[in-house]
Image (cartoon, rainbow, N blue to C red):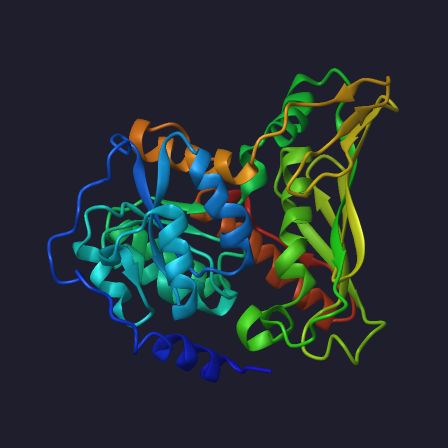
Amino acid sequence: MLNRRSFNKALATSLSAVALTGLATQACANPAGKEGKLGIALVGLGSYSKNQLGPALKDAQHCYLAGIVTGSPDKVPTWQKEYGIPDENVYNYDSFDAIKDNDAIDVVYVVLPNSMHADFCIRAARAGKHVICEKPMAVSVEECDAIIDACAANNVKLGMGYRLQYEPYTQEIKRLREAGDYGKPLYVQADAAYRSTSNPGQWRLDKSLSGGGALLNMGVYAIQAAIYATGQNPTSVSAQEFSTRPDYFKDTDETVTAQLTFPGDVIGNIFTSHNVSANRLHVATDTNAWYGLQPATGYGPLAGMTSDGKEISFPHESQQKLQMDGFARHILEGIPNLAPGEMGKRDMIICEAIYASIAAGGKRMDLDLGRMGIVA
């Protein structure tokens, strides 16, 4: 298993033998047919970039894949061939800062292990590039603040990789809450979990790289769902951690449950795990009605139902496409940023409180999130 130091060293040196031409020359303009679109560079070419973000950018209307940053030289030819990426738009982790001179790249999307988010988000901001940070935002609230401050200081936009904020099922839950036709939410159950069985050496199970386990990986989805379903930030949290496979989950949390309180006697319960599959949002109201989604957090298609038998259904679209197009339009047109950096910081505040509660034997931890200004 890699530790953080050896992982970062490997990333920094692994492309040293690759000849990357054109970095010192004038950056090329957008290729034909890309006029009016923002160029995005993906930092990290793991499975999420390969299977979700890259394909989504082929169909996006307001952005496209302009560049890549990788620590794996063997991946470069395949990505260049599939996406038409010129040599001058290919970077490694050492040469990354030269991206500041490349006018073809407008946005940097950081898709690296969590412990590396702050470093590359800050470097991207200092290079004058807008930033999308994959969830969780960082491994501490302090790092979240550093990212937000760097983007503000360099006058660049910052968005979180919260794909669900941009897809229609999530928006419909918000609409049902705001319309009030089914009453006021009193209780929310949000579950986001999957079972990991075959790769104990993955970086997500190494705390030096991930910063945490199921909570930071999947739990943020459950936290988000509880918040947008109630329309409020929680005021306190109590939490418990369970481990049934300590031989596999040696370094990170396996299963976490947490109870959230909200203003107006509203309560929520979240469940997250790397040891069992769960994918649900249930909202119970003061009229004995309910509505919800199941599945609620997957890549789609999602599905939903209400207590009076109505289906919640929308044509399936790539959530990642909607997310990146939404952020691009925020930059190009000034539409609202549905997942700003402050939202990522808020969720990290809650995660730190959950870990503190677990360490204190489930003690209730008060939260002061009213000043955050982000509720859904």
